[in-house]
Length: 434
Ligand code: GKR
Ligand code: MG
Image (cartoon, rainbow, N blue to C red; front, top):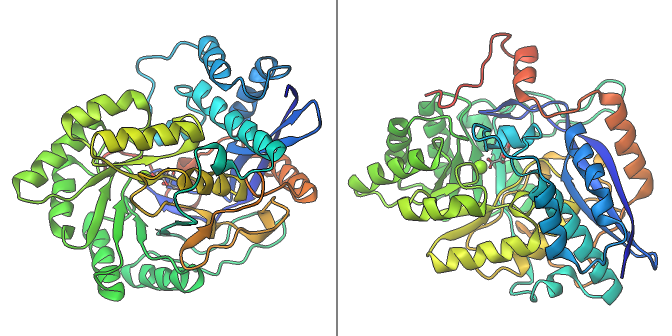
C-alpha cells in the first residue's frame, strides 16, 4: 500500500486563559491535522503540535513520504533523522521550547504524527482498531485524570469568532479551585485530580492541595505539577508538606540532576513520594541518566514527542524493566490526539496511572471529528471496536478550524506574551521562581 498524498492542515482551537509557570494560555491553541492517503484511496489521520514552524517541518518531510509503502515506518524514521539539522548543544529541551517549535526533536515529532496516521490507515484497510495493530488491548476503558488549572475568567477565542462560554469561571484561590474540581468531576466522573501549579506562591498551592484532599477525601489520588517552578529546597519542602496527600509530585524542579536531588532530599527525610516527569525526562535519551540517578519514578509518556504509538509501547517495556510507573502527558488537543492516546493506553499493560488530558478545556465548537466530542464517562474513555482510531474528520469543522488559524494571527505558542498583555507587562518566565 503506497502513500499517494500527505495533507497537513493547521487549525486554531479556542483555549481559555489557563495559567502555568509558562505564563498564560493564548485565546487559541494551535494544532495540525495530518492526513495520509493511500493509492487505493484510504485515508489515515493524526494530530500534532501546531504553528508555522511545525507546518514547515511536515512540508519538508513530504518527499520522504509520498510513494513510500505505508508499512515502511522504521526506515521513514531513519530517513527523517538522517535529514535533521544538527542539534545545538545549548538548545533547551523543555516543554516551552517544544511548544514554541523547539528544534531538538523535530524528526521524532514529525515521525510520531506520520506513524499515527499510517497506523490509522493500515487499521482502516484491515478493518481493525488501531490498538489491535499495537498488540491488542489489555483494557476496555482508559482512565483519565481531571486536569485542574488556575485560570482567569473567560472561555478563550476572539470577538470575531463565535462566542465561547466559560463554564469554569475564574479560579485563583483554593476555594475556587475546589469548585472547579467538583464541577469537572460531576461532569466527567474523573477519579484522580491533577493540579497545574507553579502559578501562585508555593504556600497557596499547598493550601489548594490540602483543600482538595479535604473536599475529596483520601481515596481520590492527587498530583501537583508546577512545571519546574521550584528550587530543590522548595520542592523538598512542598513534598514534605504534602507527602500524605499526593500520589506523585510532577516536575517540581528543572533538570534530571535537580529532580535527583529532590528525590534524595525526600528519602533522607523518610519520604518515599514518587517524582513524575515530562520535562526532565522527555525522550529515550534521558532515560539512562534518570534511572541511574533515581530522578523520576514515574514517566509521563506522550506519543507526540516520544516517537509515536509504538514508542510508547517500548517506553512501557522500559518502565517495566526498571520498575518505573507510567502515566501520560497532554497538551491542549482535539479528539484525534485523544483517541490516539486511548488506543496506545489500551495496548500498554504497564500504564499504572490515569492519563492527563486537557480535553475538558476545549469547546465543542472546535472539535473536528465527525462524531463530535469524544465522551468521557466515569473518568474513562471506551476503547473503540470499530476500525482505525475510531474517529473520522468532519470536513466542515476542519475548514472552520483552518479559517480560525488564518484569522487569529497566532503562529507560535507564547504564554509569556499573553502574561505581559493581560496580567503584568514586566512578567518574565523565571525557572525556578520560588
Ligand atoms: O497547558 O499550560 C499547559 C501545561 O503546562 C502544558 O504545557 C504542559 O506540557 O501539561 C503539561 C505538563 O504536564 O507539563
Ligand atoms: Mg507535566
